[in-house]
Image (cartoon, rainbow, N blue to C red):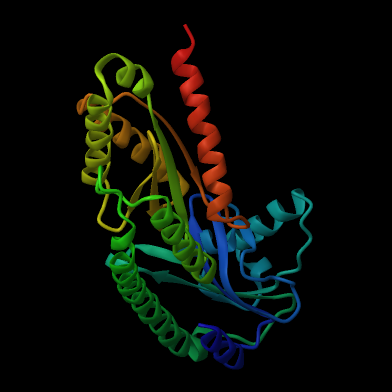
Length: 305
């Protein structure tokens, strides 16, 4: 991808070329070839106020040597100035990039502080070819990630909790580290959900540990049956479980968490749940800490009269 951006700068020598990914209202820089703006991987822009969303909506051209002359781009420049952002942008190029199943991944875009001699007649075809190359690389990345996860699953089989069929704490640690590496390399989103069963101690005291083990086994089976094949379910110890959702934007987490809660309730398992997503400038261990805090808040809320 970096080579493609460097090649594009030779085709159209704007100061900064970027491959960005759209997640909610964030436009996240995945790769950047920057020569003036100080933009790097992990930089986040406001998607709703961007040039790129206006291009995608068909309100302005993909290639423009003078952004201020285009009403939609001039509107974006005024909004940036009103917000105190005086970043100079005169020339702009933006092309949508599609991921698997032709879903929008993000935008290949470039900006320059001065008017440049760029035109669709000369640059559109080679840029379209570059977009095709990037989309092929994204597809290849999905395939490589899938093979990596299959290989990891074979390794993790040695770290399975016998009672639930979920991974044990060691397996969880390995899976989390591998997914964090993918997230960092590709700018991917991911989410985690922490689950703590309610009333296990009381059940053990009143009905015996076999009843408690049946509850734990039911919880583990239910969680594994509810998630996708690519997701990871682990029993961290006692009555505590965790689920890792790779390539999952934060907007999806509330529904996924509710799906887990509903499935557990239908199986006769009462539990407290907390979720958090990996932040662009953060990591999965930090998300896990926040999810754990949210889970305990949920537990306290269930105890309140």
